[in-house]
Amino acid sequence: MLPRDPSQPHRAASSLELFFDLVFVVAVSIASAQLHHALFEGHLLDGIVSYLMVFFAIWWAWMNFTWFATSFDTDDWLYRVLTIVQMSGVLVLAAGIPRAFSEHSFLLLVIGYIVMRVAMVAQWLRAARSAAEYRRTALFYAGGIAVVQVLWVLFLFVPSAWRVGVFVVLVALELAVPLLAESQNTTPWHPHHITERYSLFTLIVLGETILASANAVIGALDEVESLVPLISIAVLTLISAASMWWIYFWPPHHRAITTMRSSFNYGYAHYFVLAAAAAFSVGIELQIDLLTGEGHVDPLIASFAVAIPIAVFLLAIWWVAIRANADRVVNLVVPGGAVLVLIDAMLPLPVALTTVILVAVVVVLVLRRPVRH
Image 1: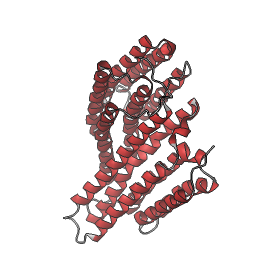
Image 2 (image 1 turned 135 degrees about the vertical axis):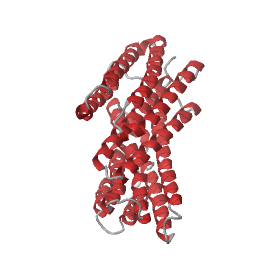
Image 3 (image 1 turned 90 degrees about the horizontal axis):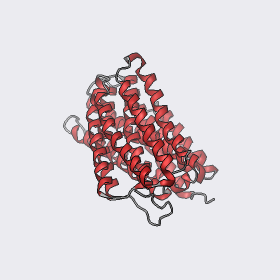
């Protein structure tokens, strides 16, 4: 398992990496569905906290594999088998998401993590054995992942009153492992490849959002007297999702990870990009619930369920990729658009106004090209 060339031309995501990503569609879909259910039932704070916790587990599992693969993807039979084992762990994790929301039981999530972590540790040990120049870094990764995983097992026995606080501490430890490991000797990540991987995962999440929204619209066809409001929401959802795609792919992402510090900024801040994109469909589903008269959804909560994910998405992608490649106009318009989206949630026709704001941001980006340094 020799390291890949970080300057290899035309490096692209492999078919195994794309296959690996598809498993995460299941987990993201279930997490979004559970958030919708929690907000629909009026469990606002509990639902949001559970979603943020569960989505961290999903995102961090994907992150661990992705950054390893950009440096050490040898695509031999053992690498493929260990990757498929990790995929099985993701499916176990996905199966545990409903209980994490309804019962605050993290047993299946931790079991899924154990499966993934054992395979991940094996991958790093293989790298340590073959790549002498990165042996110290690889062993630090293997040891750090194993130690933190033991702490996740102990997390199952933490009293419920302390669980969120302990979770935050364990998240900090998880984030610290790559920081400390890479300080030994930076692994040879490929800037074009790694940013392509993030882009593809973002596309998958946006696609899942469109699918979930479309299913909600289809399910409500027989529940409303007029199809005009449903068609309007469907059109606005597509335009909003397309605008988010346009905004995300406006800057040259590979320029955002020119140093180790910027690569961590890019990688870690994508948690907010992805979690927000996945949560966007929840707001649309709540808007449809209002149209069908199901449940007792507060219209203001439904409006903010659309506005907050979009605002977070705009601010996050501006921070990680747009900010350094934009002129003063763009750097005012994008974060300003996020603020306006939050304000229009309190006005009539919030989804329509949000869509107009997103389209306006896209128009500005079309007129202003990325700044070349």
